[in-house]
Length: 102
Image (cartoon, rainbow, N blue to C red; front, side):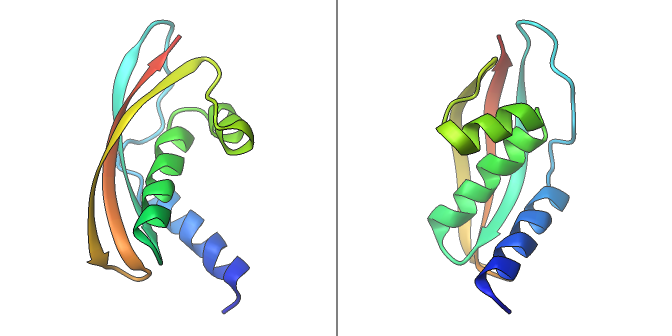
């Protein structure tokens, strides 16, 4: 399997494993999201969790974060991870964050 195929599969798996679900945030609303990510490295699995959290919140915020590291219209609070070696890719992380709509 190519690296690109593995990466695409990991992204799809992370999205499917999202625990937080899709929700529309109203103005000045804060909420907690949780998700699961898997990758060949711990840092990669944590990155997958971050992606899931933002994708479950707002695809536009996720796209901006991927491009610039910023989440316009949202504060993306401190993330908490619990990671273990294992899973299909080498590392599996469960994570959560407090996200607020500005």
